Image (cartoon, rainbow, N blue to C red; front, side):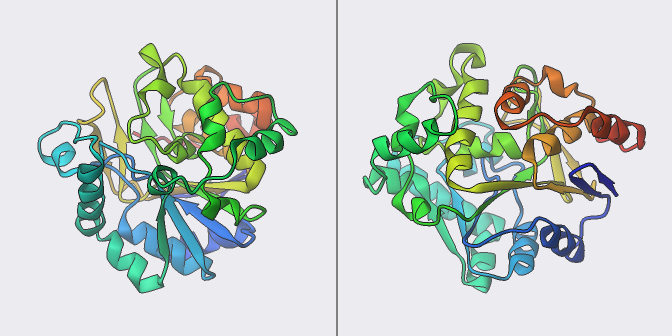
Length: 302
């Protein structure tokens, strides 16, 4: 079924992903940003396999290091070390633990870690990014973001960035982590607390700011999936309630409307989701009628 620009499928399978991706009109070069933020609930190997099979063309998979994507986070319910050596070891552990390394090898796809590129100084001159972004949007609030775009991604500008998001419902004030929030992982620092701010007061604008940058360089499209897992998180982000085999997958060329619809399906008012409301003011508002039709459909998550 379809609500405005959002395609909704209640049974996620390889052919369903192929059908959705065919309708998203992805234009090469194609960058795929999965959700590997934490090691309890993430974009699984099989989902990535289906997506890469559906796209077919050469793809670059991008992610940054995260100190919650660790063995400790899974088994000891605590954050991992932020040292560079520990982050590198955890990343290799995760690729094996998740089975993702085998999928990348199967498709001959490069996994590009943007944190390593930034650490090595392989980034575009900040003033170049500033000029491009500010020709289209208001300035970002933290100038550090202008210096966080790797050459490797900048060389692919003009293509499509597919935000391949895991469905996560969180405690207020974050509320949801979907296709717009997924780009927050393109901020390369392993700990992003300064972009959260005290009690998350900076988080909404930080999410929108990184979207400004990558929407300037790419056409951004989105998939939000809860095929094998989705998470409902309270105060402790390392102890989410995992819901399995919901089968749901949604896709759209409009990530703001996509996330607004998903928010309503998990029982949240998208107008009360701070980063979505702010994103709608810059990137285009969702259609209220489409959101209402989604709610009236009887589809409910969690």
